[in-house]
Length: 91
Image (cartoon, rainbow, N blue to C red; front, top):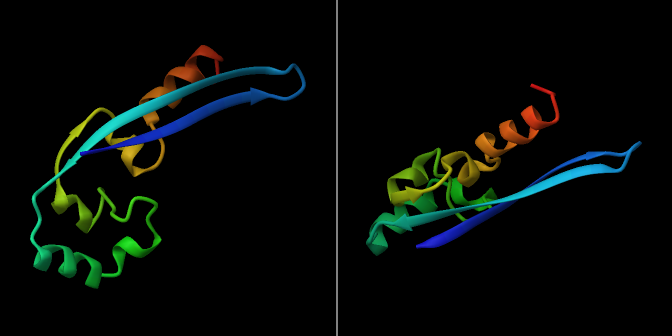
């Protein structure tokens, strides 16, 4: 199990107004065999991923459980971003 932590910030430069949030999601991986890991690496998918896997791609097969925001693991916590944008009257 590991944590994915993403920071989101809205900044209005003329006024200096800003609001930030941090989102933490816990991801539990399966007990993958060496062969399963080697097969995933052989796809080439993990080579440009910050965490070494793509939960939204083939790497999702290595994930047993996601506690929290799935979109945070993909790259941007959409739920939190939406809340911030709504607070600012932008949605």
